[in-house]
Image 1: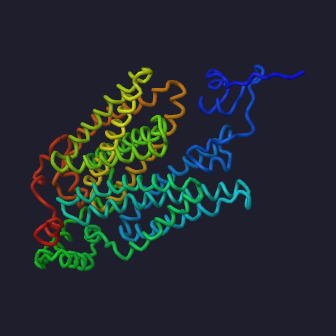
Image 2 (image 1 turned 120 degrees about the horizontal axis):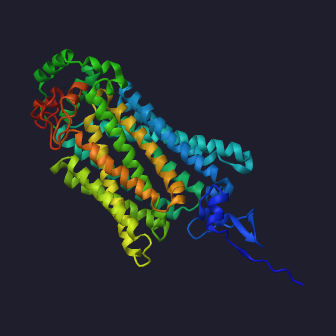
Image 3 (image 1 turned 30 degrees about the horizontal axis):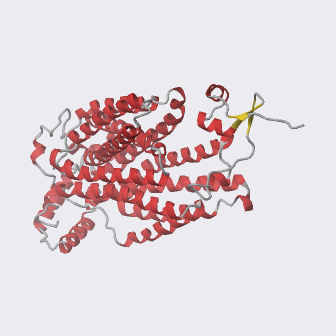
Length: 495
């Protein structure tokens, strides 16, 4: 005789009631055999797109998915810690040394992730802990570089150029995603891919010998002699004259105009009512925009085609969004494009819900997904530039670090929402993203416009911008420049 078995997937109710993993994951990890549900103990991995992944090497599926999610969550925690830690250090010790240290640690942590995880040699736990540690350090230092170099490039130029260099960094970020997609497509074994990316980034450590310190930071710390040497070098490079008399007057004025609140460092962001409102408003904006950004970005795998093509398409859309930022923000300001992008994202989000169950709307859903990615990239890139122009020089890196820390919380919530909330209702994450985005759009209305304004040097400069204004501040400072910008204007040292 011959025994016959009926094998199929467990139903959705069983997965929601008896497991803590997603329904899709549950139906790949359990089988129904003669009306009994049993867990799988051996797995076959799809090799259509990937040759050999870390998930396969360590069997991080089913009841072991917690190891995979833990690594990702610790990575986000590293983002949070690195944002505030290196932000404070950059305000205290300077932009240049922090960037240099972070670049060295980026290369080192990449090699740790490549060579230390050796399950056959060391066993699972030593390999897992070393990889997790390497990822944590990598997250910390990449945020240190990301925040500090953005602050540095905007402080090296005058009001009319800060937007150009800030947008250029965003464009480089999108190009970096395209480079990653190129590497991943041709190198489909995880260890080789990690090694290739580490070798690709290693030469950047030599930027230490090229990048200068921020003259604004030197001035804010009273290092006038070093600032003068650097400004003279910039003037010579740009073939501009250097006004010695204006330089001396600026140093004398700075000695008298130090804001007493700035000595409190990070606390100065919260000591006055205006700074408190601006700071927490920006923290909330970053939280929401990263919630939406990562929520949309993490769904690119569900766009219905090759994951490499999905990721490349997403990166191209993001690149187009940053080019759009470049073409619009310097003409109509920061707030109006930001508000427009956020409101449109809210509309698209709720339209996506309406057509989700329409079997004929496959192409339309794809267009909606592309639109969501485009709009959230615009709002994310805009708030990055906008925040940098609102924080004063003495605590700019600290403020941007706190914003980035808030952003990581948003990224963690997005990851959790895409998994847990979708178990309740598939469109619930979209409702969350759209609702919070609408609230963020309304709260940003109280912040001042920064178009063509000099970067604030002190807490008092930021407070004088005022609140509840869409097109600009109603203070006298709207038509003035700080002493630093008078020296760093186009007629003196900039090309």
